[in-house]
Length: 406
Image 1 (tube, rainbow, N blue to C red):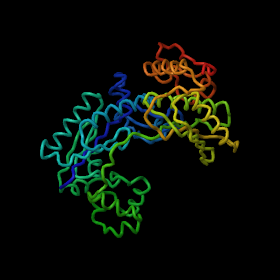
Image 2 (cartoon, rainbow, N blue to C red):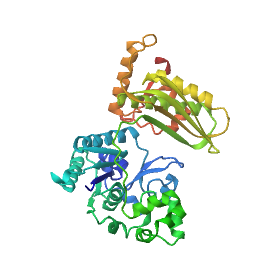
Image 3 (tube, rainbow, N blue to C red):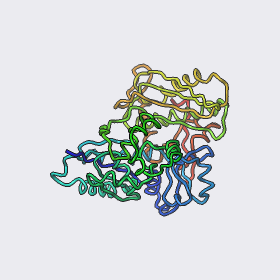
Image 4 (spheres, rainbow, N blue to C red):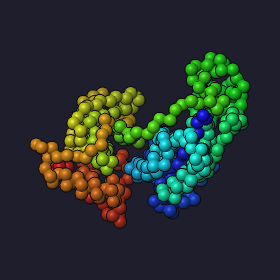
């Protein structure tokens, strides 16, 4: 039996989320990503594509190409919420689901043609997502993951495409070799040096020539160019880690700024844990110096999602890790070993009022944004690197929670 794989992709996902929250952004050039000169474009609306802007581009270059665009730093918590909503819709409807990223999904519909029709089912599911989540989404349908993903990219924006069984090779042949998954800029340049720019040329090549030039990846690229892909659907499971990183606009050795940054990240990630009903058992801190040497330390801890347990661990790891006294380019915090659960009172250290305080803080953050209430320790000089502390309270300053409260 031929397999039937559908690939769903939320179009310009971060931009679509921002437009859903603010309709004034509709039909305007919008770019989401790091707002500093070292930031990177995470998503760009189709209105910016004519200027040459694309995801992964340095933000500094994007500003030069499209200075009139609306630039938004974005909010990972908001995007995670919308992604989870779409995931839940798909999980209810499809037999096997793989979540490839925050905005990409594969589903195995093999066998459904007998009862309903895979293309009709995928079309109705796409309309369901558009109606319930309010987000534009495209899909490609074929016999395998590679052809379905390429079909989705050809169908965009906000459309759908089916590749009938037996026509995979003919569909791929006229396309640029860059559209085959695994072919990045470096591999594409190698193809160009060989005089190859479209998939049809690769289809005519002996597989032995591909392996001699690209090694074992050459065989995989050749197979995908010929519409052959036996990669199975990996069923979706809940994530096992959550992390945050910040790249400074200018390398720094200011310890106050560094500590402010990682404290704010540790606090925000703890809130994300509690909001998702998760506990962590492992904390990792990462530092990247100006010479791009990267170091990290981690520590196993009892399961928790409480700021006042996690922040001291993060600070201790930072103190042990920061020993080169060189300028620092990036810092990061990661919580891993996640499991479902809620914060419990520690028999010896905590009081019920501590738990109630967390509940009150989280209620405010959920309603007004994750930066609407924060510790005073995160408002030092380093707070500028955490993002714009925009206020939901009609321009009023955010509520500040003194560090000594906990």
